[in-house]
Image (cartoon, rainbow, N blue to C red; front, side):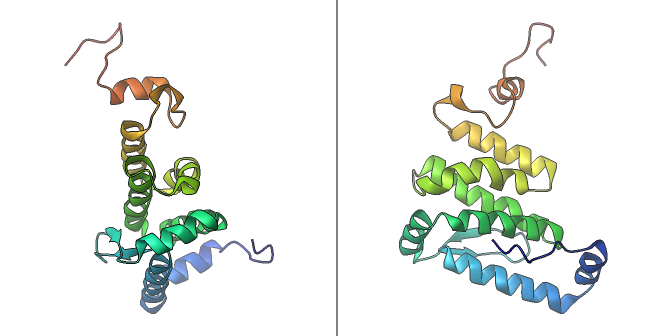
Length: 165
């Protein structure tokens, strides 16, 4: 962690958001970091990502070097702050898929659930990610990333004081 780094001011953020060159450089840097993780930005408009051909080798690195989890969280926060919030959910989704569905990246799973999801700015996107995580998490009774009432909604259950639609 760089303790000498300072948070961006609102004025700096506003200046960045108005600077097309700075935004292009951020996307280039994002692509470079994704490549390091074995992931590719497949759509610059939507932020969709996919695994690269070298994903196995890069995932091995992620498994061994858990300090990258903090970097990924910072990247997600940066994307949200600097005008690319639509890039956040696709990246989190690929990590949730790899950890919860494919059983890979065991050492990334906790960070994906505890930090990556909650770095996503868009409330509905964040909720969709929690729902996706819940759908694929086992055992369900140990899922702690949303209240039990929300889990019931995800399961399609109604409550005694509610009438079904």
